[in-house]
Amino acid sequence: MQPTINQGNHIIVKKLGFRTYGTYGITLSSKEVASPDLMLRGKLYAFYPPHKDTPFVKRLIALPGDTIAIRGNDITINGSLLATDKLYEADQLVVYEQQLGGISHLIQRISVRPSKDMDEIAIPEDSYFFMGDNRDNSADSRYWGYVSSDSIIGEVVYVLK
Image 1 (cartoon, rainbow, N blue to C red):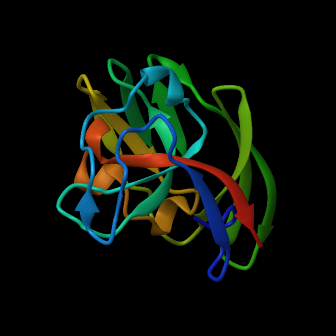
Image 2 (cartoon, rainbow, N blue to C red):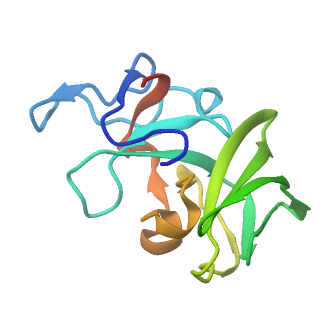
């Protein structure tokens, strides 16, 4: 999740309202997200990706019913291209500022690595599409698909650097 979260950082996750309470591998309740209003494009969330028992933290890109396509550095959601501005280039990294859902955040690309393109898809009901901010070095929904609402742990509300 570089440049947003780096190795050694700690995060605080708000779990209230997500109905996925549990600890040490024991789930106390496994219902879907209490309210889809809690899921906002551009925010960071902790969740369990499909077929994994280790929590991940990624940025929410697309909601149920959205369409998304990825071509090179361009992400199109519901027919609109995400606003992305190049900030600087260092070594083989290029850092951009991206606007998503009224939230501005940094992403980084590896200039020597090709992008993982994706044809347009529609996000199913009760599912979400996540991507890492380190776009060219991120295991995310482009590779393992959607995340169901019952796998969402909560919203990342603070990153301790």
